Image (cartoon, rainbow, N blue to C red; front, side, top):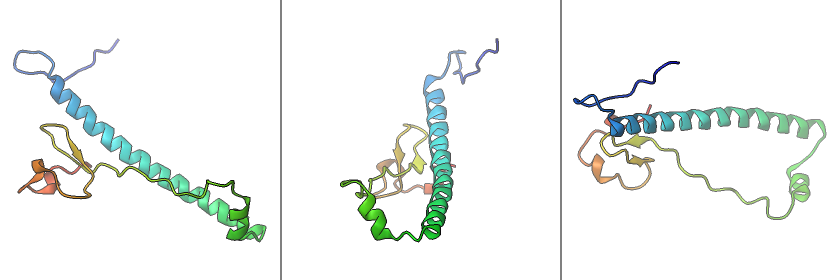
Length: 113
């Protein structure tokens, strides 16, 4: 069985904080990849819907009429995280006022890839 390697401090003890921050960064990168994959799948689904609507000569008013009441409301979405403080693990979406940990620093230093 393979032994899992983790970061360690000077005493040979696992550096839990560093491991946590590495995992948090990976989580945000994966979250972004999931969002991108969803966008691609959504594009395919929309193309299929448009093709079907065209084949059957369906217009939007017919779609609205066929939808159950209350289903037309747009869902609000949580903004994707774009920046992370490597010291505290705190994140920022890039919307609104920049956090104190970014003050007078280059935002690219904190950008998640």
